[in-house]
Amino acid sequence: MPGRLVLVRHGETEWSATGRHTGRTDVPLTERGEAQARSLRPALESMAVARVLCSPLARARRTAELAGLSPETDEDLLEWDYGGYEGLTTPQIRKQLADPDWTVFRDGVVPGDTPGETVEEVSARASRVLARVEGSLADGDVVLVAHGHLLRVLAATRLRQEPRFGAHLLLEPATLCLLDEEHGVPAVRGWNIEPPRG
Image (cartoon, rainbow, N blue to C red; front, side, top):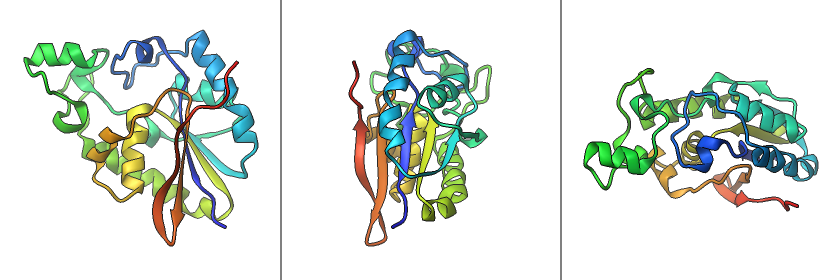
C-alpha cells in the first residue's frame, strides 16, 4: 500500500501563541512548544516513514529534532511570506486597513521588509514539494514538518482544491494531519490530531 502524507505543524512560539503572523521571522519554540514537539515522537515512531522534509526555519527544525526525525530541509516549506503584515495579528491588520473582514487567504498581503506572496505563489511552492515527494510515497509515509498557513495551502493543493480552501482547514501547533487516497482520490485520513500530552 502506498504511504500517507503526514503534515506536522511546528510547536508553539511566542508569536503563534498570540496570533501574530509569523512568516520568515525565525522565532524559537517556547518551552511549551518544545514539550508539544516531544509529544509527537511516539506517534511518528509508529509510522513507516520513508522520507522527511522540513522547513529550514528553526521552529520547524527544532520540532522535527524533538519529535525524533532526521529531515532534509526544503526551502519550499517556508511559511507564507506576509510582507508588510509580518508580526501583526489579524485584528491589527483589520484595524490598519479599516476592513473588519480582511483575511490573508482572501485578501493577501502587502510588501514590507520582504515582498510578500500571493496565495497562488504559496500553492506553487506546495505543488513543487508534492511533486518531489510523490515517488517516496511508494516506500512509506512522507512527513512534512512546516508551518500553519503553508501546510493548510499544501493540503488544499493535495486535495485538488483551490488554495484558498486552506482557510477552512484549521491547524493547531504540534499536531498531525494524515492525507491519504481512496480509489485514487486524495482524501483526509485524519486532521489536527493532537497526541497525548502529559
